[in-house]
Amino acid sequence: MMVEASSRRWQELAGRIKTWGRDLGFSAVGIAPAADLAAAATGLSEWLAAGWHGDMDYMARHGPLRTRPAALLPGAATVICARLDYWPAAAAPEVLGDASRAYLSRYALGRDYHKLVRHKLKRLAELIEAEVGAFAQRVATDSAPLLEVELAAKCGLGWRGKHTLLLSRDAGSTFFLGELLTDLPLPSDAPTSAHCGSCSACIDVCPTAAIVAPYRLDARRCISYLTIELKGSIPVDLRPLIGNRVYGCDDCQLVCPWNRRAPSTREEDFAVRHGLDSAQLVDLFAWSGEEFSAKLNGSAIRRIGHERWLRNIAVGLGNAPTTAAVLQALEARRDDASALVREHVVWALGRHRR
Image (cartoon, rainbow, N blue to C red; front, side, top):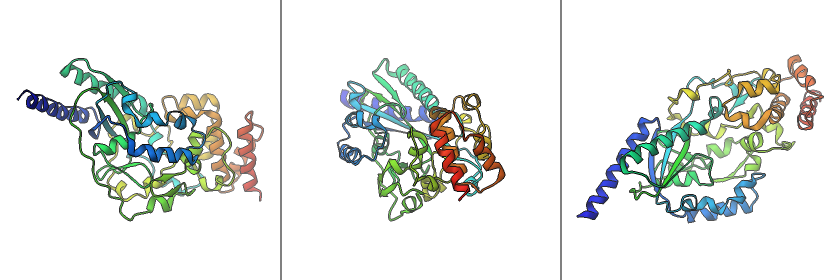
């Protein structure tokens, strides 16, 4: 009877945790076992061996650790996984079709999500602690070597789509993930079934053919990698394919049928800032380093730095219609202090003077 009572106690706590999570603004909360992700380890090893992680050395450096949640928190028993919707309702949808404007991934139009998700998870931990007393815990949100999608899929928050993102029937893929590792013996939730079927829309639409096969992404070709993670020169053959995408890419999400159901965020922090959902390329290219830092203070975009920001926009300008304003903007940075920026400006000017 004592075992049964104990089991019921943890079951009831799991239910309260999900309620608390929703009250904190998470769209869904699930509980996964903190067991080794052996099945995912093989796929990760093959991905790294193929070199598809590009210059993201940290992926290889922490590769094996990513499949062992208990290595991040000794004694870990369960992982509380949470989803937080980010799609801003007011974001202009037609920007991709206007090559004079800059397209920035919709997750980055507002404030950086890391602090917000961490704050909510820490608050959730406090509520649990008030209920059960001190317990071993660790918060993670895209900041620790952890296979977030695998864990979220294990507890039914969605399934891995062919574009490699987590997909949900009621929320599409436009959400952030966060985790709270614990040593609590909470009951785990069951995974859900996959619902991509024969659809290949995300594979077909990828501008750079980065999704080389279902569930296989060559990051070296991915526009998100090229505009955010890559520190050096963007490969010349890929530049025309980037179009006006200057920070990230949402194409595989925009075309996904499940994202027709994706709700808009309720978080004010994710509201569009500084008109970044429809800004002109020439206007953003004119930002000084000081303006970049000030206007993007608290934004995820700021971490790429002003130099890469200009590099990316130079590519966008090279793909824009030839106008006096575009040529003037590029000429103004032909002698930029950064060799990286100068290289991409010269390429862009060459595109307009062929």
